[in-house]
Length: 203
Image (cartoon, rainbow, N blue to C red; front, side, top):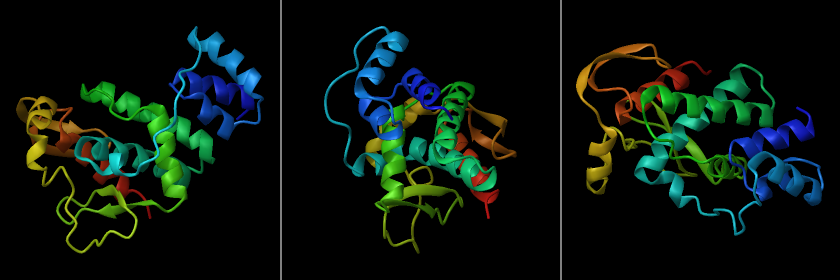
């Protein structure tokens, strides 16, 4: 993927200037000019998120796990290169949220930070002992009794969980190819279904 086109795509998806500097060889001045041309304003200032803890909290974990399963599917199964797979995976994540009627929780910069944490072996995927989907966890987390936040949501998820759930009924989970009964599209159960389907399709 050409450097300028990659930078433009990343800016369109919401990347911070630090992401562009890390992933392209363009000068900072060129990147700032591109950013202003694409977004119409100057890039925000401030530090990037640096803690792994955000990715293992309840709702961010569900969304992060879905995105990273998309990324692995594209890179390991379909042979996409790292950043090509990253951009496509993030677009797939946004499209899936639109199809499910859910608000995106994972911003582009958070998704890039997640990728870097995996590459630094600070995070890993672990299969849920209940649903079989693979979810983001801290590296070296004991896995024999691991149950994901969808199968066993924390009590503090209360209001957010009710807001994320819709009416009950039967529907198809597109990414998993599963027909189930339960909360409607856009619920944690849907995201779990997508993750199970993606996990099962990889070696």
